[in-house]
Image (cartoon, rainbow, N blue to C red; front, top):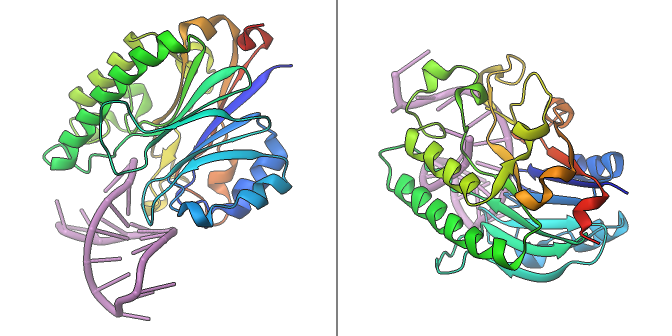
Length: 262
DNA sequence: ATGGCTTACAACGTAAGA
């Protein structure tokens, strides 16, 4: 049986529950990593997910951020946050499931290149790189899925000239993304994506989705050990076209049986 | 043009996202 692993920045799990529950029922992923749950742990919809046949590990806070991993089977060895980087914001959770180590991450947005939040973003990314170097030793079969808030190349930007040097595309952010790959990962979309348009985010404003003015900032990174088992990677634009959508689309990849390790 | 849209909070406007 192949393994289907998805990531989706839902921009509030409570506001998005109609679309998320419908998508889980239709797409039947083995694993769904979510970001921007924006829900306190005590209000997390554990039972509603159980009713759909899913278990979940989550780390939330009031109003902002929040990450989770939703999965068909057991979730073991749950860890929250980056080693060696104290961060009150809930942006990373790791679990073992489906025979793999899976990380759901929500990289800081950065706001603007001249903002203090930009420095925080770069520090967070440096800490993520160091964390992943260690995690790869512990877990050679590793998937890092989430909203990276970086469009890695100009191909991932609807209007590269308009975005040049801006947040999400600046050189230092792109260098940080390349550094993540260089620790031992493939970008699943670059490796096996065949979509003409791979954008995963469109601004709510200005009819951006209808005009396809988007960016590819949601990514699935697979460790080198999983490279041969990567079968497909796809952006599902359908939920972005529905009413009350998230501004992000879900992205999924399919790994063949070899990914489980035996 | 510092706008444009959406969310949570316990607010009737503000902060933040990207």
